[in-house]
Length: 175
Image 1: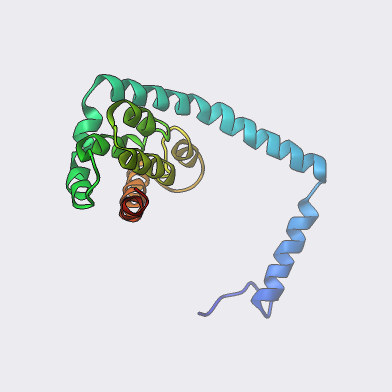
Image 2: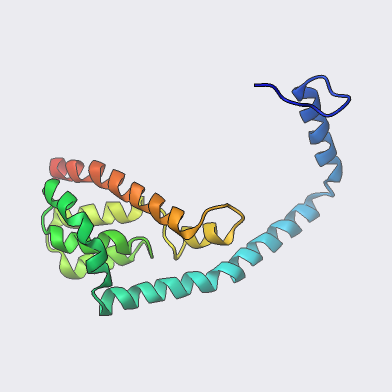
C-alpha cells in the first residue's frame, strides 16, 4: 500500500510523530480536559435522555396493549421450533421487543412463559442483543457514528440470531 506524504516528510512515522506533537501542543491542561468531558456528558444526557425515555415508554405501551411485537416476532417462530425451544410462540414475541429496551423481553416473558428453559433463553438473549433503541441505540444514533436506524436494526437481528443459535443448545445442556 503506497501512501502520499506531505512535503518534507520521508516516512509515515515521521509524519505521525509530527501530528502527535502538534496535538500535544494544543492541549491546555487538565481543566480543559475535564471541561470538555463535562460538556460532552451533559450534551449526551440532555440530548439523548428524552429520546431514550420516549422510546422505552412507547415500547412498553405497544408491548402491553397491541399485538405489534407478536406479529414482528412471528418470523422467529420456525427457528425457535427448530431449536426445540419450549413455548416457542410465547418466546417469539420477546425477540423483536428487545430492540426497544433490554428489560422489556424479560417483563413479557415473566407474564407469559412458564418454562424455566425458555425464561433462561429470553433472559440471555435480551442481554446479548446489546443494541437497544432506548439505551445504546439512542446513543449511537445521537453520536457522529455514521449508522442509520435500518443498519442498527440489521445489526440487532444478526446479534439476536447468532445469540439464539448459541444459547438454545446451551440451554438444552443446562435444563
